[in-house]
Amino acid sequence: MTKRGLPKYVYRKGRKGYLYFTRGNISARMNSEPGTAEFAVEYAKHMQGRVVPTTRTIAKLAEHYRRSDKWAELAFNTRKSYERHLAYLVEAAGKTDPASLRPVHVNQMRDSLRDKPTDANRKLGTLSALLQYGISIGWLDRNPAHGVARLNPAGRVRGPWPGEMIEAFRATATGRTLLLFELLIGTGQRIGDVLALRWSDLDGDGFSIRQGKTKAEIYVPLTARLRDVLAAEAKRSLFIVCQDNGLRVSYQLAWKDMMAVRVLIGAVDYDIHALRHSAASEIATLPGMTADHVRAITGHSSSAMVKLYAGKAMQKARATEAQKERK
Image (cartoon, rainbow, N blue to C red):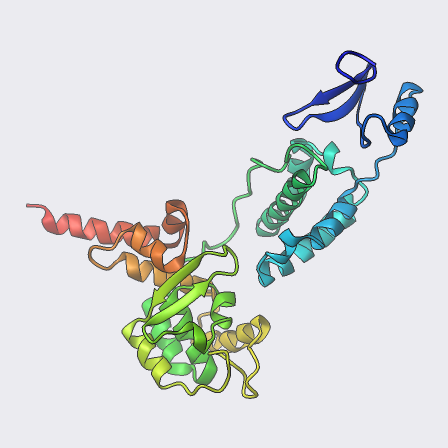
């Protein structure tokens, strides 16, 4: 043993001091603690030039992640999305030691999906979340997916619904579909949070909402229109948007209801999440409104996200104000 208390060729690396056996062109992570029988076996095999097979793989890390408290804290729709992309990662690289990944490997995965940029970016995001979890449990000391550039999405960039489409939806939709639409555009919240709204969340003047994705707790006052809509709605369930039998409406059912109306009015290009853009853009165009006012309703934590959702509307409103003041 050296005066560092470690055998020859064994060193601590990184900020967390993980152990590595480094000799010649071999550099391997030590998975056991010094002084244990397991460590002695690992060390002996390395000294004999035998590589110790890793017991840590992408597949096992994914399984570990799904059983964790971190996974349980994710929003339902986020977990559902992650499940699909984790299945791909396990199939493509399930036997790979996550600690052996380098940014070049992540770039290769991303580029292999270049024909589907949105899907590639989501898989990249899932991989990054998985590896970040791996860091938290000591399986690796860095995230090779961190900082890897996303691909530019193909096709039309999501934006707010045009005013004529909003009015057409209101003129066509009925029942719970119209109620859902008014809640989405009136509160500016994500579909999952709107479907989770209960009558008990409403104090008469607004909703107390704990956002499923960010866990942020916000208060969203009612607009005059939404107040009238809710006042006319019968309380048939704990949930404001509910089925005829009182059960909560699932995302799949809500999407089906909304799509049926979108097809009728020619609004297929304007999806549910774009109504969140519509709410943010409407607020941004009102006199005196700032990014802070938009954030107060949408719950976004950064100005960058407000710019994404309402940047064009804010620029147009401020430009209009500036031109009116010019002499």
